[in-house]
Length: 284
Image (cartoon, rainbow, N blue to C red):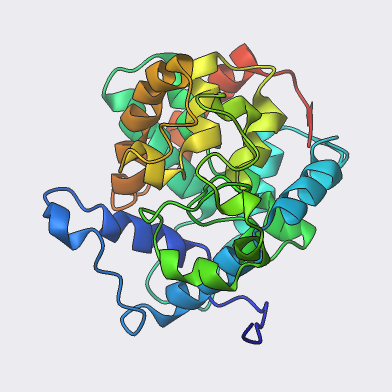
């Protein structure tokens, strides 16, 4: 196995968001989707090399044991968003948008299109799981396309070839089609690669309707909701709920270039919206 540095390869987490948005740019020809040249995006390529090498069954189970008891203290939704703002790279000359700005761009685009209030709220909170970086987690354990571990990797996953360095590639069971799972076992029974999607789902699942839970938990599961992979693990209920994941995805990808939200003007709406679904503080 090649030596692997676990230092952060991206200047900031927005680099990954930008890469994903360009990958699925509206109007892009289908044949362009798999054109991932490492020399064109060396930071992103190195990020995925780390992600695909280090996201193992053992790692995922360990992170679940570490974080899912939700023992990082209590915060309000706004406190979590403000906490996340410290991820902004002040040296980046290309953007002065904070994490809150991006979340509001997403939620405002959803609101403009007349979707239900819970849908708007999902846009506001969908990236709050990135506070994992501020708990000391490296980028490869926070962002990136998510995928099941413990079964064969789909060739629809970006930079699929980097899985050859993953120790799980040497486990014959983990490389079978169903691996440690059963046919159509349902995604709730599948271990997904660890990151902000799984974390924010668990933090907020007691407060939101099920479509919102699916949006949060699987919004980075691109091989499934964009390419149709892993349907052999999905239940009929998963198939039905993924319509919501696909409805959410364009707002996450394409709202980033919108005008910077006027926070003082829209703040009362979002304060009321958060209070409708959440108590003052929740466990993180």
